[in-house]
Length: 355
Image (cartoon, rainbow, N blue to C red; front, side):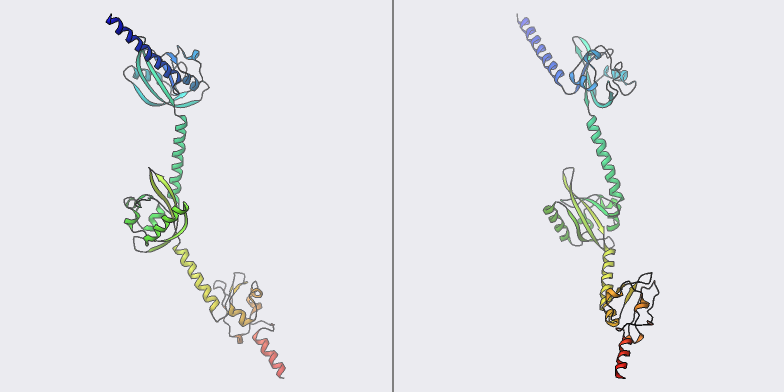
């Protein structure tokens, strides 16, 4: 009697287990088949398999995957079956073919088991096509970013926000700082002493917190040789491996700033000098005059612009030194017929009245 009870319990447990398996088999979102371990012919397939392949259940039962042309890699079917006869397969990435000829990437796992005392194999295939496409797009995006990152003439650096550790730098950054790429990646910006004023970094971080990103932030950066570079920084927060990082673009404006200062100085001298000065273009047309020129000649700036020095020349008695652009080689000459505002005409008018 005890043996009968035990046998009944075993059969009930077995039925319950088979029922659970059948439920999982039918409802699993991954494609599943049960095939003969001896020759690979399909004994059963779930709804997901039918959906993925486009084949009906009647079309697949009794056929092998090779006969159904499911393998997108020629000749791989027998090799897979041979491997299963000696062990399991776990997460084998392989392309499969649908009924309409389209292919998809699958991640296959398979394990032999006994199906009603018949050696069989349970095969599970997960469609990873979208994941593969996303990975390829990500890889392409990373390649594009890497090319743009290293091709940029500006200095680019990715730093860890917490400690300023350099995670990636380009050639432009190395040119500004004077350090090699390998050396940079072993140190932080603090170690390199890049910031002339650490307060600049604090203000940059503060603006990042307030506005989310920073553009055209001016700061002085130190080169390894001790020289100081004036740079415009633009920073954007990014997350890498869970760490808050910064992508910073540094544009060296040292030379352009120096040029602006020289131009400003030249403009100041141009306007403040007591000598009359004019500037002409290559066609000998006046495109700038200073205040002294207008006071000495009596011509306003608007009257002089666009004229030639020969037409606007004043007499030598005006004691004006006129300078044209060096490359033009233009000198003022006395006018054959002047205007009443020239120093010569004014003196002539005075003599006539005296007579």
